[in-house]
Length: 99
Image: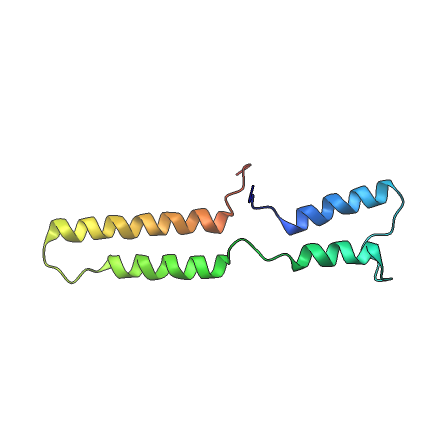
């Protein structure tokens, strides 16, 4: 399964587990305790939020002011732009389960 998780939360959970077993975690001394957080940080993100936001913004702008004098079509296009703006709010919020 390709779930999206927070790297910071994963590191926090691992830090607590390491602490429970009295193992140094991310101490800068090298070895296993530093390799684990480095490995997690190196995992590529599932998507780039900035790229997603840029694309949504571009799409919203392309529908905001259609070059048509037809009022119905103009309202339709503005509705699509509103949908893109709503999607941007969801992305900005991070889509967290508890929000």
